[in-house]
Length: 307
Image (cartoon, rainbow, N blue to C red; front, side, top):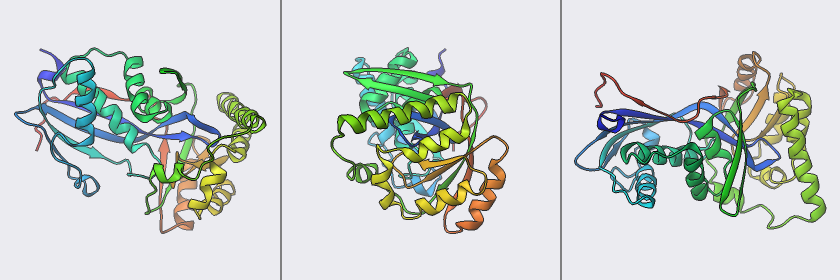
């Protein structure tokens, strides 16, 4: 008997990309989750108790099912239909990797039901081909802090688990689609600016790994890859960043394409920072988040009935 013969759960963490200057290459997994309860069925059926997810297709046209079917087809497999309960506390279109978590969930679904036997590296390449870059999908797959590169059809990542900080995510009610946020970016950089931008990203990685939090915060502010162009789309960004740093944060950055702003602090300082930000920005949601070090998981659902 295999895992796919019974009920099982797929759990995928949220993610934040870039952390300022690490554009399309740095991601961190966060403890918000997309969860699927899966069992084989006579037909494809997806459902959710979440209001935010109720407008999605309820059959095989659901995005997660489409990813699963496409993945299985690459390996010459037809997937048995499944009944899937989809739940998520990852806000949609807020820069917290909701689409990346869905991609990873779909690949895990195909791998489990189709018994594909994929390695993590194979899953990562499949996800990166769909997403276009490895930051969000790499973090959701591996957990921890992920630094990755996708070039000429090959993907390489380093997943760092010996690091720990907390973040307070300031999440507005309004969404911002990634395609809109990418539309404001320049189409090319000069050689000089490329060197300057990449050096800032390199120092950010070194600062994070050496726990030089003050330097890490400085590098987040110095990004020239994307934040200067996206900030005008997020009018509260500067006010939030200044407030956070005056209340215990060592740095702030757009979460992915935005509009969520992440405020980074040392372990143990997040609760007080969350309280301060909640008071200062009552029309938005402030969430204290920690790094997820596990990444995506698939496990048997024992003695539970899907309803």
